[in-house]
Length: 390
Ligand code: APR
Ligand code: PHB
Image (cartoon, rainbow, N blue to C red; front, side):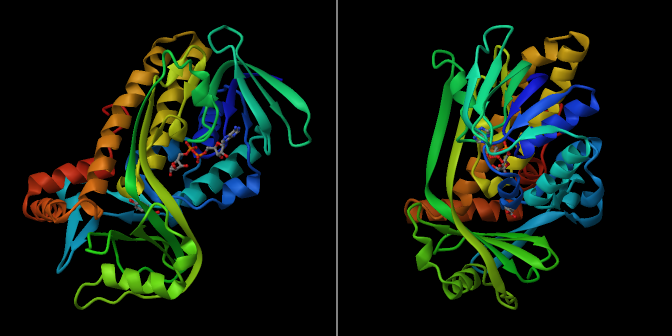
């Protein structure tokens, strides 16, 4: 097969890149390790920055989003005895949107199918070759086990944290930074109306808890647990009791319902640089992971892809390589800002260390409640910067 852009991974990053390139008249081929059903069924985060919404609209996948996404003007920060609203709209005139990554993926899959995108699902043995040359190519086995090859002008690794693309950058030029946090999240999806108008990020002696939502009828919750936590030890009753305890505030009750999904998620930060080597580019989780506390994972992937689609359009469409040459540095500035913010939120809200750490966390939380400056710093980071100014 011959194409302009060979894309490895059909998660949100790969699908959105194919969509944006197509709108600039640049064709691509996608390959994906999982089945389409698996990709569509994965449950991930659900907060979109307004710049992410703008990119999705410009990509032509904003219709359903415009009707069903719920605008949120802030969040609650909570610690024992206090639930404090940080009102982004009041502070800086910006807001965020609640719309599950599952929905973003569904919209993108529908748009790519309608456009006749070439996608190979259930591929194996993916190899990335000769990215240092003018003839980069991808080899793989298709779902019938047939060996195939894609020759492309450029290859983009959108294959997530466990994908092979990152390793195609020679170890001599590749640098990685990593932090593994000493806790994990137990994520829970439940058929019950949210018990709150805004997300609640709660500090508690027993560990962090988050009340999020997906729709007027579906709530999403997270509980801080140990990294090695055995999910079998978390009955539905135990989950509801822990959520009620950690989210408790006088005069408020947590509504309970049927739990439809639960899983344990590790918490780590990871950055790989450069995000371009020769004719190979990395975007999304393939190049960086943030802990979910700042709700940045999907937004970072969308920002990478927005910058990259423009750079590849200029290069492959008009022969101007300048933006492609700057891609890695441009993307990494935003990546490190989000990495810092996600680390900061995570460190402020999770129980770790000793009582001294706990008192520092409470002092920081009270500071945000008392100071417009401190609250504004959180609001600017949470709602995200524009793509150009990161
Ligand atoms: N060959 C082909 N595809 C692969 C391979 C491989 N060897 N390895 C992994 N993949 C696929 C995965 O199956 C997955 O569908 O690459 C895709 C990567 O998708 P995501 O992990 O969703 O990453 P990305 O598209 O960068 O999305 C950004 O936002 O909410 C965050 O971390 C969350 O996934 C989310 C991310
Ligand atoms: C979610 O709804 O899944 C979610 C929301 C906010 C976060 C993380 C996850 O910070």
